[in-house]
Length: 109
Image (tube, rainbow, N blue to C red; front, side, top):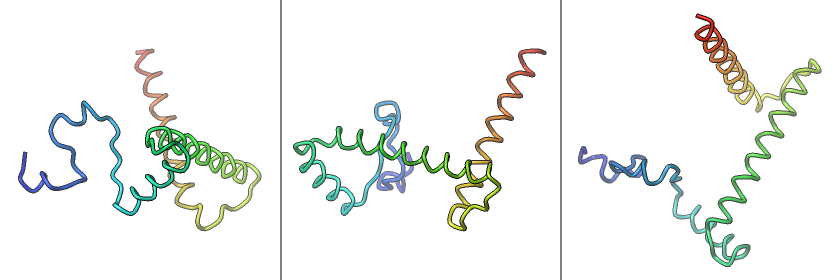
């Protein structure tokens, strides 16, 4: 491995991706906040807090998507701060549609 990558926290060492599929990187301040919340809610255990926060985050993302799609369906203009989210959502939907069509075509070929 390249020497400059050994200290780069953004890159996982060789083989680590096989052992730790998800290993988020937090700043020291973020980690202290997480530890404090884990101490308040789960007796200091991090895993239940991360699990709970992840599920809550997914619910929030899904709710925002539903609201954004409802606005579009009603012909409303999305807010300026939702423009990037809308672009990502439409790109994701188009990619999913394209991938589905590609699979359908390969199955009929």
